[in-house]
Length: 397
Image 1 (cartoon, rainbow, N blue to C red):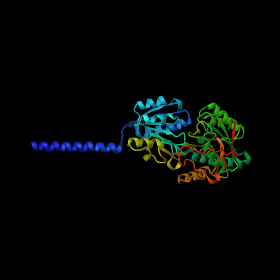
Image 2: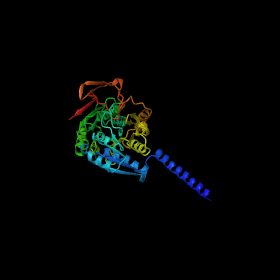
Image 3: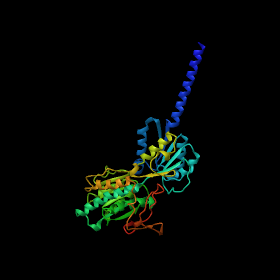
């Protein structure tokens, strides 16, 4: 009888050992079952840039439900980053995402080696040494800008054909925040997309020197419209330019091209199309990596530059939304899809190319001949095209 008890006891021990071994194996392969995820926003969800970024948070909640806890801090200025960052770290976040441009994130990351810090890139990361737990990422926005330009070009072509404007009135306006390479790269790609359809189009750019000012952005857009611009786009963070176009459309034909957030609800009569950076693929992939205890760059799909990642249409990091068929010219969707198909095949060298000489506004002796082509985001996720095509782009004060 004792022998039976001993065999039974040994069997139980073996089964328990196997059970806990299996749990350990599952834990190693599956990582953490529950995570705390932090988000720090430079603004709030009422602005297009932050609203667009917050969609990644919504995607996380939808995918993981109660297995993750999300903590959010909004309206955090770059020079106020330290306190909310330390607060989220002290609350046990496993990974924290930032859409601001503060250098504080990289500086403090080594103090919290068990936390992954993921920041939208704000400078050239190529060749830089960064903490192992610091990561940067950005969608290759120039691709969406170029496709937006094709839609705008198709509209301008229609306006010329219909006699609304003459060929020498093919003028577009751009409301820009700052003269950084990120902004210059975007509006240049936009204009080159337009010129692939209407080669004589020129652009006027007006800087607001702030990322978010409704009144100033609206005023700048109104000025550009009054100066004869028939298409307006922006790299700023309010709905001001879209509202200016909507109001102006009561007296003249003008269209608006959106970025990050569709303006079809606030400006339905003029909104043509919007390009957006999709943050979801990176955020979902990074969280999956942490859950599985894997390196983020081994899970997220994109163009890997160390701990820095970028991608475009090919990986779903850029998309076009809300093409307004009531406003768009016939054939617009087909023309856009043709360019997107090229991007998805990995062909990108047709964007920054043509009979143009670019001049670095910070160093006039630095020029670039676009006849040989320029490849954006080749080594870093941050856009580096910083050359003004002054023959076709005019900066107005």
